[in-house]
Length: 322
Image 1 (cartoon, helix red, strand yellow):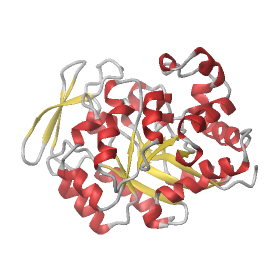
Image 2 (cartoon, rainbow, N blue to C red):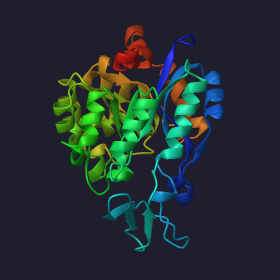
Image 3 (tube, rainbow, N blue to C red):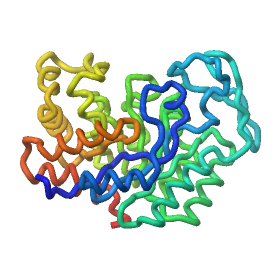
Image 4 (cartoon, rainbow, N blue to C red):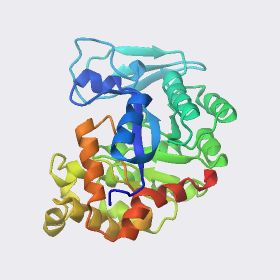
């Protein structure tokens, strides 16, 4: 289906300082660079987010071990907060809006390319003035959604956002909410269920196939406001990522080793109306990005299902703007 319209529901722009430090993955992509590879690969539009980390939430100690440990909140006052490295104990004191320039880059990209991008912003709820920042961004810009990155929640889960002013603002403005999913405690998709039940006005996207968490997928199937995006699906199927295996049967593990089987598994678990195609560029390189798009175009699924996952579901998800 080479003429298939596709919306990438998970693309990041900017620089990811944590990825740069551990040097395992690509770490930087401009919106102009994204536009080029979108055009080359036939991507109609992309949801764009700021890359997850800035200098503020990466340990500033150059000799600190390159581990996956995130910084944790150790202190805050009325206008600032301090993060501490769990590895070496170094501290970063933040007395400025953490995602200011990253959000600005996303919103600027959208203003110049409204026909190509859906902008999502990032907010660090730990910042004492986070609600004030969010109100101003919503007053001055057209924003489709928000992502609360795992790095800003660690070591807590998304449940920490329950009954907060920041979620009330998100709800009042009908913003779509995106969360990372993973094997870590703070990335367990089950931890968002209370949020989805309380904030029914909002649609929620769970990234990375919800890590194929069957219990969550069963719950999500019954919730009208939960969607699953498929970034890293190729890496699941070729076993570059294998930590999901514990929740699957031997038969299911065999099935998802092939990309068609993985998508069919998701359709069976949650239904074609709840799945969104995504890539997570530049957390994956350009070659992997292109491979994901090619694999999706060649899926052995009926045309209606592919159109829903590749395009229609995102438009439904962002219905207040379409």
